[in-house]
Length: 151
Image (cartoon, rainbow, N blue to C red; front, side, top):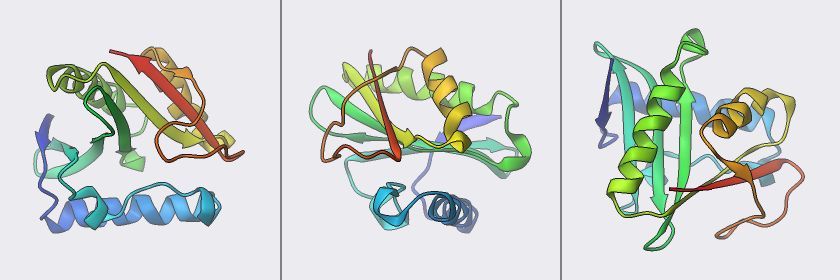
């Protein structure tokens, strides 16, 4: 497997992300859905990575610059057939290292509060993220869990 910066121009990653957005819409109330679509992920303040197994996308993740020292983790996803195979840990470790290299001193995220998101919350805790108050443009939301860590 390899992790590559992705310009989001390929059909496979577009389909992979569309599945992600559709799944989030089916699980989360519309007003609590914060998954970014393809156009939003192409903005200059976002760096996006795909995890490739050969020519197949098996995972993805991104960071969004909030300010000079603070970034937000976005769009973490592993293909359902490969969940719990280490892809998310590999990618999260990579993103944390890249965020440090980019000069960020804090990395924060929003994830769901529902039971479906428990594995994600446990993964983030394993990597040193702790619950925090809403950051950036987020507001308190019973469907969201906010987490952060110092880099």
